[in-house]
Length: 300
Image 1 (cartoon, helix red, strand yellow):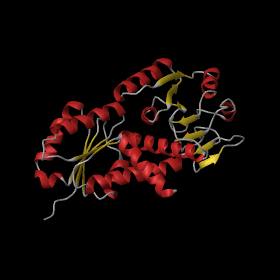
Image 2 (cartoon, rainbow, N blue to C red):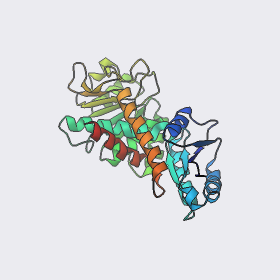
Image 3 (cartoon, rainbow, N blue to C red):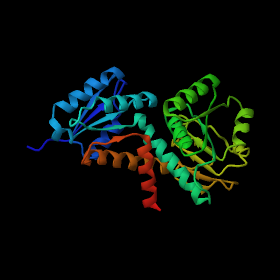
Image 4 (cartoon, helix red, strand yellow):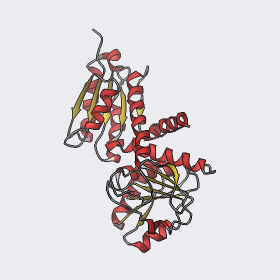
């Protein structure tokens, strides 16, 4: 009997995401096993249980997916799983906590493409303001922007929270992230006045830039919003906008469903590639960005 494709889903939370379960099934995994309340110290043991029980040939049909809500912990779990492998007993591993790695990659790739469509060279040298940037998507999008040569500014209402997020995330991934407390209109408008790109990465249903706020963004080239729940996170950016000019502005807007469609394709392709890989692979957000660029290149 041919061995089934098995995906082990590890999460530090109390439940795995139904979204990830559906994605794994649609990518061809025949058995999907959830593990909840998984701490970092448990990763090595669980990984070795997964690799030694099937032999090298069975390992090729075995995968590990790391979920949860903490983007830093997920990165540590991914690394801990990778180090627990004992060749030739090696399986593929993919981390995507709260979908943040694939969503951030789609967001950055769409923004990069819009900047190039606007006659630029991508994100290098651009000042990117991430409103609601202390969340999962904002932190990883900030890291990707910084890795691409942008000045990435995580913005939030509480100074202590945003400063901690920028420092911890930047240190973990080896980049410099700036912090901006935008607890009132004056501070928000000051940050908008310097921004070439604004990314709305706040919680669903939270508007972080109004139409009147946007008037202060005099350098704005791209506004990209991941919020699909009304009202829009960035006023004037419709959920289906695909590099569409904003009202009374030369800036281009990218909507949540456009970004979400790319995110979906990225996660699906990575799960399929993990299952089909001739040799084990390890996927994180830099790999997701590569796939997001691929999706957009095919679209264009």
